Image 1 (cartoon, rainbow, N blue to C red):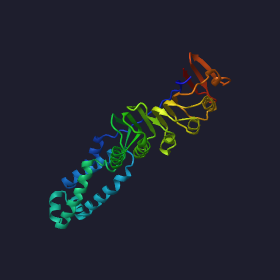
Image 2: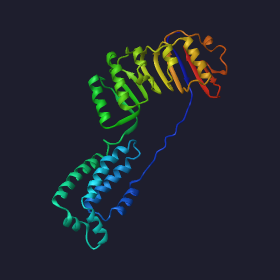
Image 3: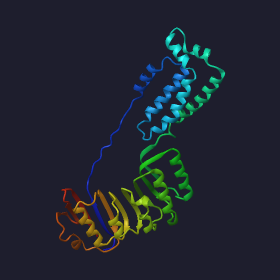
Length: 315
């Protein structure tokens, strides 16, 4: 009957490994390596190396090297002979040697280089690295095109990406949703998208929404509202997790979907939606192999690879 809830779920586990690099190790290494330099230059190089090594696990760390290496190259070229003299004459301080051998033009050049390096240090290299977070949640706000454009610019300027993008209790308008979702999924590179709740309970996700390339390539999709998600959408996409509040899946498509699961043609984890069409449960499950009833309105399916999946159908 209309309003039936159809749910399939199975349990998986993923392990997230963290690589931890301590600043103490870097400090000891840097102090031993650059102790013969001018104290000011030692500080700059030390901070730069900490910044580089501290961000090396953030992702696109190659982007850091170009400006940093250029700055270091210019810095070291200012007075190579001074460094050699420092190593050969321990009785002299590096400060005296630099003061004696640096020309006024070299000092001006050093100031320009130090400004660039100071900018890198103060920002921590954030504009040069990609920062990936588990999820970004946009909560209780009017999602307009103008606001979306500002968010998109901020994400790209700061190179912020995420695995999951969430909208929670937002005001969204039908005519804007396609553009907003497409832009933000592109900017954040998210492969999971959920609208947990919409203030507009009559909001409708039209057919065009599910056929956008940015939506079709998602691994997880969850939507609160009415969805024009029908048989061809279910059979042509390959979501690992799918939550739809109200959709238009037919009994025939559900049967075909179950057969593909039993043949291990789909790598699904959870699918849950409320269908608006009446479904005859006995006919839906009739003659399916490796299916066992475990409770009222609940069954277990075992696919050809031995994986067990749970089905719950509620009227």
